[in-house]
Length: 226
Image (cartoon, rainbow, N blue to C red; front, top):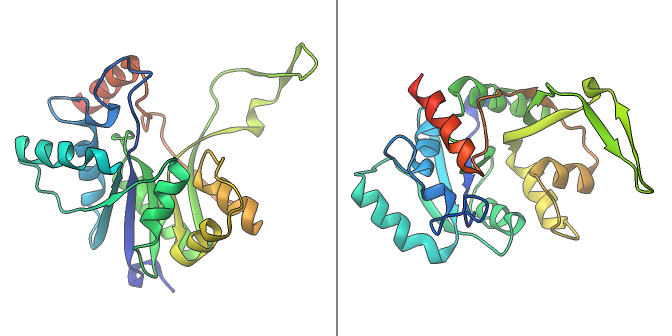
């Protein structure tokens, strides 16, 4: 089926506590250009026609988020779902409420995501089953050996993985339902380990940063100002 006849979902996962930010407020709620980070992220996906947005938050943060929406007059339509103990459980909770179609799973603290990348991820996932945003390394890297020392490796063989990670819903739901552990760092890893399916990389963007430190917040402010 073509991607324009498949139902589209965005599953935005935001369960961070802000420990590396050194703040009492979770990083997804910190202000970025006078508005909480998470609102920028949701708005970035709201420009996609016919997209249903699902926000996964810890249940303990529901009231705080709802109060923020009132405070900032945030009316972008989205559905609120309770997360779990880990990112894995939060994503699985969100997947349980969606039907057949394509789902883009995205970090709530990646607010600088372009419409072009989102649309491409849906198109490729519709054709190939999955589409994972990634960028090439800029720096030289070294591999640390288990017994000590390190060695140079070819950076052209490695990519930095981002989100969105977009899938045909039946494929990713099946992978999450059959996972035997939850120590995964991303959704592509779940699919790869459970099904053995090939992972399809699409070109991400260096400005599609994940906000985890105060420096990241400053960089994101510059990108938004542009």
